[in-house]
Amino acid sequence: MSKTFFSAISLLLAAQAMGQTNVLYPEIQIKTAVMAAPAEKREGAKVYGYAADGSFKVLRAGNNDMVCIADDPKKDDINVSCYFSGLDAFMERGRVLAKEGKNPKEIFDIREKEVKDGKLMMPKQSSTLFALSGSKDNYDTASGDLKNGYLRYVVYIPFATAESTGLPLKPDVPGMPWIMDPGTHRAHIMINPAKP
Image 1 (cartoon, rainbow, N blue to C red):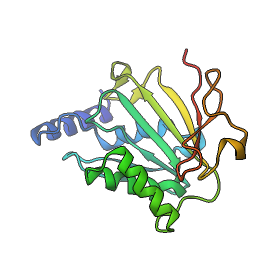
Image 2 (image 1 turned 90 degrees about the vertical axis):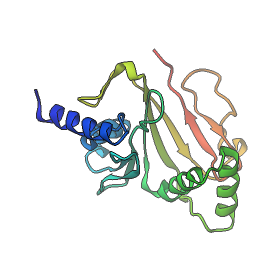
Image 3 (image 1 turned 45 degrees about the horizontal axis):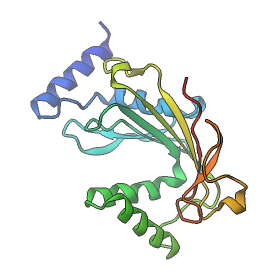
Image 4 (image 1 turned 90 degrees about the horizontal axis):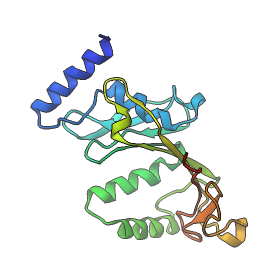
């Protein structure tokens, strides 16, 4: 058996003793999280994940422009994401507001106002997020490998509209780029490739 396997088992046993049976070893969380990033960005990406007590924390400091988020052990199935570091303040503000108990509409409205007021900065250029999802049935908690994952793409273009980009408001076929939340701070291009 590998050293990683035994390390993962040790952490799982420690977490179970603390009442957190679903928190994975940090190296496994990191391996899974960076699968959402382009290959050349994975090694240097900053990674947020979960401590044995379930708290959200930085698991690895990065040295490039990519930030990755590990799978939330409290949620069903596997969902990890990586995004351009210029989006980190926007993402962190959303996490803080969610922790305060704000619902998605409240989070949207608060961040919209803060961006318009100049209190929360969004990147001036287009900024990409990569989201990888999959079934827990296809996930190996000992190795961090995910089979049959689905990767989709989001490109933030604050305050852009269908008219300013030529993008449709919904896709005509799978994989067609379209604009969501047009005219707002969170305007973004959605690209959802066809599923096999």
